[in-house]
Amino acid sequence: MSGPRILRCHVGVGPVAEGEALVTDDNFSARYDLDRLQGIFSRPQHKLHGQSYVGKVLVVNTAKGGVASAWMLHEMAARGMAPVAILFNRFNPILAQGAALADLAICDRFADGDITRLIETGEQVKVEPAVGLVTVG
Image 1 (cartoon, one colour):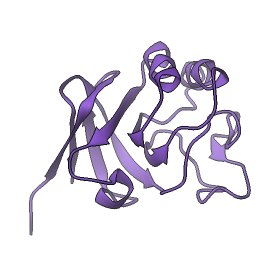
Image 2 (spheres, one colour; image 1 turned 90 degrees about the vertical axis):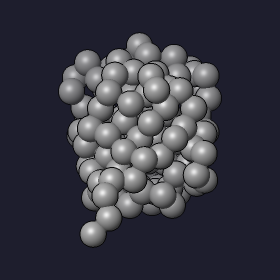
Image 3 (tube, rainbow, N blue to C red; image 1 turned 30 degrees about the horizontal axis):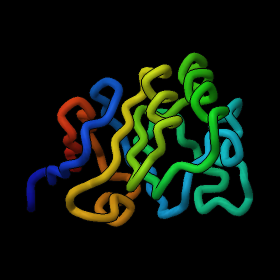
């Protein structure tokens, strides 16, 4: 049995966070993909359609959308309907601002490759944005 895996990434924003991973190679928009009142992916074409993201470490390819995503992350966190962290292959500055406003852990640019292939749904994940480390297992 192997021990935890340590993944290195670009320094992110937000607090240390831990939770169960919810992974997809799809992209992420807080505005268009989510039912923020029910805490589920609501866009029928999204690969996580119908699944809850609340309290999860969400692992996705990249961010899509604009400035509305920033305040939506804050609104979701204020109501307790947000993931505990979001890991991206790449995110944009707007999402970084939104995560900082929401006090949500967020990281991207993983040294070991495509993050959507390095973590599996259901694995336990610890995210340490300030030092650019993610521990899996």
